[in-house]
Each structure stands twice: as C-alpha cells, then as structure tokens.
Length: 446
Image (cartoon, rainbow, N blue to C red; front, side, top):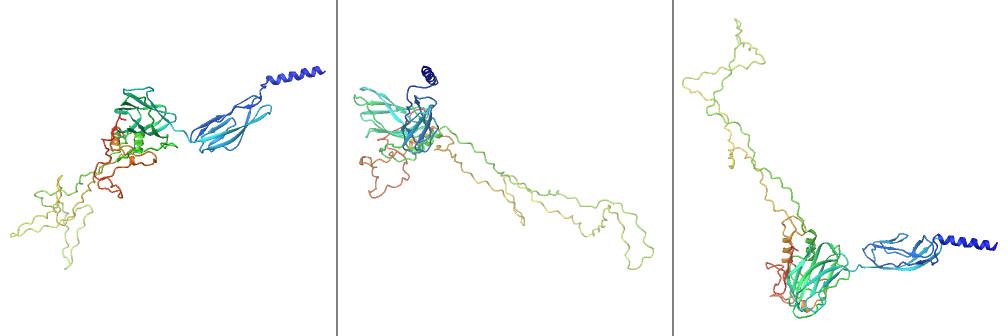
C-alpha cells in the first residue's frame, strides 16, 4: 500500500512538471531605462522561473505622463525626477516575489556635432566634414576655433535643405556658423569646408555648439559663448522663418473690380429741326349745322353742339392777320443742350444743375504678400531673400556669456563712455567689416 501511494505521488509530480513548471525559482529580470521629458517611453516587464502565466503589480508613484499597463510602462513623461517603484510578480502557483526599481526622468540630451578630420599629421589642405548625430534638431549655432588653419570660404558647401550664414574672423581665428534645417534632421552631413594648415600638425578642432530642438527651442544645458556683435536687420529667428517657408509663393490676390470711369450720358430731348413746321389742326368733318330757332329769345345763348367722346375737340378759327402785321412764327421749344463729347467737359447753362461727375478711384498701394520669410516682398521665398538676409545679418553672442574686454564693442566716433551709442541713421545698416570678417553664401542657394 505504501508503495502504491508513493508511486501515485511521483506521477502527480511529473504531471505538474509537464504543465510548464520550472525548477528555477521565480525571478524578475527587469531594469528600467532612463526616460526623457517629452520623449515617448516604453519599458516591458520580464521574468523567468516559476510557473507561467505571470501577474505583475506595481507599487509607488509614477511621473506625470507615464502609465502602468500590466505588462510594462508607457507614455510621454512630462516632469523630471527620480521615482522609486516596487514591482511584484505572482506566478500560476501563487508564488510571489518583488524587485525595487528606480525610474529616472531627465532633460533630453542634445544632439552632437561631430567634426570628421584627419587622425594623423597633415600639411596639405583637407576637407573638414560637419555631421549632426543623435537627436533630431531644427538647427544650431556654432563657433569653431581655427588656430593654425586658414579656411577656404569659397569651398563651404551645404546639403539640400540646409540654410546657413557664415563669418570668419582672421584676427581671432574663429569661424561663426548659424545653421537651420527646413525640417528637423538627425544623422546627416551638414557642411563641408576646406582647411589649409599653416604648419604641419594633427587637427584636433573642438567646436562650441548650441542646439535647438524640433520645436526650435534651445536644448537645456546649451553652452554660452561670445561673438563679436555686428549691426544688421535680420537675426537667427529670421533665418529659421526663411528655412521653414523656403520655396513657398504667396497666393495671387483676386484683381479688384475697377469702377467704370465713363461718364453717364445725359438724357436730352431731340433737338428741333432748323425750320419747324407750323402746327395745324387735323382736318375734321364738321357736323351738319343745326338750324337755329327762327325766333331766338333775346339774350339767350344758343346750346352748344353735342360732340362724341372720341371726336376731336373743335378747333378755334384762326384770326386772319391784319394786312399791316406779319405772321408770328409758332413758339419754339426750349433748345436742349447737346451731349458733351468724350473727353470734353459739358458746359453748364445758366440755371442748370451741373451733372455729378463719377468719383475717380484712388491709386491703390502695392499689397504686401504677408508671406513669412519673403523679405524683399516679391511674393516668393527664394535665394534672393537668403542673399538679402546674409547681406544684413546681425551677429550676437549665444546665451549669456560673461563679457570680456576683448569682445567689447568699439567706441563710435564722437561718443563718450558715458553716452549710449546713437541709433543708426542714414548709414549702412547691417554693414559688416569686410576687413575682419567675411560671409560665405555656399552653393545650391543655401
């Protein structure tokens, strides 16, 4: 009997093993990767050992934007911080275990501007490549020290969809670059520039770069660096506006309906003929005369003749002119004023109201396109607008660097240290000193 019971227990144990049991203890092998504010986040919980299926439970507070969905975490975090969590797992055999986890949410890391340069000593000109790697970016502002190198600005080339302004200062041996992309980009070659070393050396160029995210906002932790300021009309924000609208054309406005300038023709009666005919009464057949009474009563007026409704009225007999009087012509109708000829002003007769002249349309100014980035207002954002921006670009420091004496703005003629600089008047606004700096327009119009 004992042997039978022992065999039965062994069979039952074997059946439990075949149903997915494991000799390994239940274990959680999940670790949470770091999360970044504004970036989509997804982490899946994993475990091994025990008997499947597993059931996960989570204890602790999650950052705003992150949710627990029974198998992991997902969402877009909206706040920074370090969050302590406890993950509890239970298997089909009701075995339980837990693991403490930490979810760290921080600001997203900026992209990286990598300079592809020779790794050995060079004495001949070489091509420097600027590559943007890592996160998506709308653009960047950079300053590259070029000590012992002379750039060939005519060789500066940009990829399609890249818009830039460049300035080289030979006294400080630095080149400033402001770069914007038409669309957010990542992992691409941005620019290439030929450099000529002044002596044999191994290049080790290190740029200073401030990046802007896909919403054109500066990345947290951007560095600050000084630039020699210059006067100009357009800024880095204008370069971004131009890049976002490059190639667009303003919608053609509908032509306004011009009111007719032709003077209305006055309605005048037809002028009379030169010799108007004398008006005569139409010939009528007089009715038969009635015989008056033989003996009319004295002082009695004979009765008037009865005329039909449709018969014309009797015409009074005309009095024959006397021999010594001339016949008076029939009364002339009022002479009408002839219509004024085209291009001539109508003459106003005495006692006549002058006709009202139609209002002349006022000259309309040329409407502005209202297209962002159309700086020359020709209805299109194109290479001409980019050239105009480059010709009057306002360079300034990036961030809030600590000013130094070397970057102080030169004193203007007639200006004392206590007086602020006068506002630019009829000079050359935005003009740059070509002796100390140069702008490069690159190729492809960008």
